[in-house]
Length: 52
Image (tube, rainbow, N blue to C red):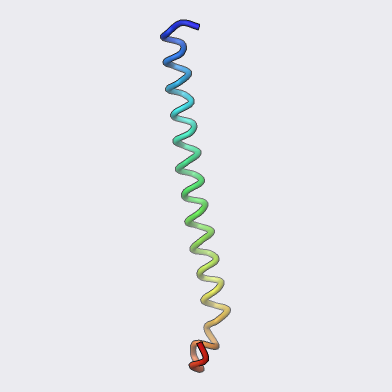
């Protein structure tokens, strides 16, 4: 493998790993927002009556 081919492979791998990091971060925040919304909806009635 020549130096130029190695550089291209490294650049491609870095691009793919960066894309995976961005997608996984977005999925994490989407799940966190969804779970917080679900939790708030579950305890809404208790907050209204002053128990929580």
